[in-house]
Amino acid sequence: MSRTTRRSEKLRLQCIQVIEELQDEIKLLQITNEKLNGVGLDDMSSTELASLRSMLDEGFRIVDKQTDQAHEDLTVKQIVEYDLMGGMDWIRRLEKEDLAYQSLLAGRRRALRNKAREFRLSPPETQPWRSNDPERLKTDIDSLKIEKERLRVFNQRMIGKELDGMGYLELTVFSFEISGAIMKVEGMMKIKRAEEMEKTKRPRPTVNKELISLGQI
Image (tube, rainbow, N blue to C red):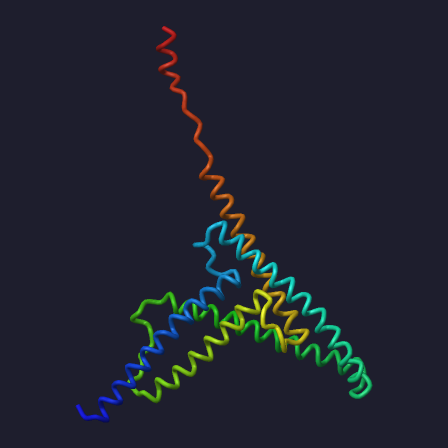
């Protein structure tokens, strides 16, 4: 094996190691993202669900507060645009377009989450083939780093962190997502409580009437 070939093979193995590490980190972030969105809750205990509910409640409270502030900022901006761009028709059109865009982004997040879950739970033989080209592997690393950061930010936002730069309608749509997740967690908590109550029920002792009759003879 030539020196160039050895160097290329070493680089390839290094890239693969980095990719595998990133994939493991992304997997954990994906699982967290699913839980924060009320997906895959079956394996969680009542205590874990209560903790998750508390985190989402706090996230909703913070996002709701930030939404109010963003609405005030938007109102000030609209006052200026009202005179410059033609009044309420202009403002309503902008709001409609922005809301449609934010709803589209929310739908994409949901689709990506579902696809990632499907991919993660699929058999190993269905996983995509990995290139041996170091340059292609470097591109894969860059893509994985972007995905890792995307998931990290979304997870933080679900608990009310890293909200800077989010606009009013973006925050509004995000609050709906958190609210929906809270409802799913509450639903699973009810199921878990019912299961626990069922387990604690003690069966009533059965009375053997035949033995009683024999004892009375």
